[in-house]
Amino acid sequence: TSGTAPQKPDKFIRVQVGNDGALSIYDVNGKETKIAGLKALKSELATLKGADDKVAVLIAGDKETQYKNVIEALDEVKRAGFERVGLETAVK
Image (cartoon, rainbow, N blue to C red; front, side):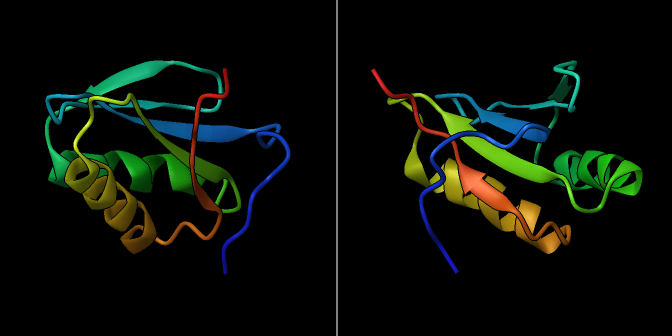
């Protein structure tokens, strides 16, 4: 299912997709880990999921980020077994 949330969840993991395809993951405390590709993302997500399998994951990219890279990250998060997955958008 899909929908629009009025606000971000209280606790979430952020996957940041750079405009060059570079990946970073931020744990629920905001600590950044740079990721070397989708395979490493899967491993890091598995570690973070072990701590809380109900945590939400938000995927973010700026306006220069290729849509393909965002979708690849989204697919990897879903394959890792996270159920609460969303796209983070900036509202200005």
